[in-house]
Length: 348
Length: 66
Image (cartoon, rainbow over all chains, first blue to last red):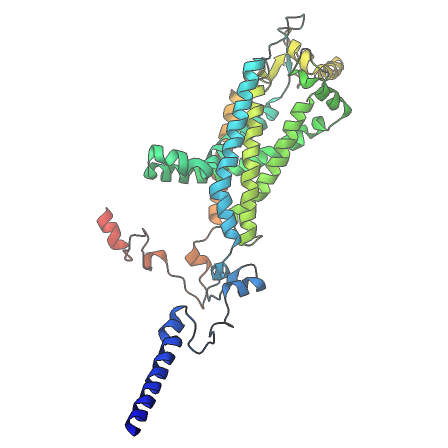
């Protein structure tokens, strides 16, 4: 009997042990998900990235060298800047430049080259439209702008379009020289913008006449030419675009040329975003200016080419300016004391 | 055409002048960030060498290169 009860007790103990082993999780199972076997989370109160970003927009450390910028560890805005720089900007730039070229090509196909008016009594006579100094300022700025545009576009498209064509070695050398040109030709460009502002601002003050010119389509659409003084409303738009964008590009360019002198890393990135966005719009605007000043309108290039334009053209496009100049001429020549040829009407 | 050429020459001349002025006021990192308490190695004696070739000697690299 005692033997039977002993067997029963042993069986109960064995069953209990089996049940306890089967139901209780093993220590290996407890730590499989990374939890501490005691149930406590030892890193629950430790400093993490999310906690640090609640204190500051970026995470930094401490360094012993004077360049404290090197202590910057994580700056999340940099990812947004990189996404703009690598993903959005090439599309924006491509659409802006190719878009304006497409529009100009379409306009040229529809409208053709705007011709000189039918020959009149003034056709063949010349009137001075821009003197040497004005043309000097224009061409110095224009030359710099073309190089700045190409080298600027190289920052965006060079590695995507040019490098596969010419190879990394040649592209590296070209990009380095383009960068030098971009930084150094920026100075005569800024000077040219300043000179043009001083020389032409008086003739570019908006007035009521400009609205009439715009309502009449500026002679670009339809027939006939609305009244205009020295610069019509379209030219005034170009002038203020050049001055405004030129100033913005100058300020943002100087901020980038002297990095971290006026702003921190976020500011540097925002500055580059502004510089690049204005830059591509500026290029698009100047492409339209180049079009209308060359193949878009017959006789327009002479104004900046030789400085003298056909008097008939001037009377059609800038009739009020011609009247002003001829009134001045009636009281004495405006261009020095050089003799005036019989076929040239001195204007300034 | 004469005005155009003069304007291009002026642009180049001003750019060259700007390059000299800017380079005058520019320092290498090892010059700008070296203090009495923190010495930044001259590129000729650091780990990568002046040509970033891993040859820190510099002079040896030149003799191989020339």
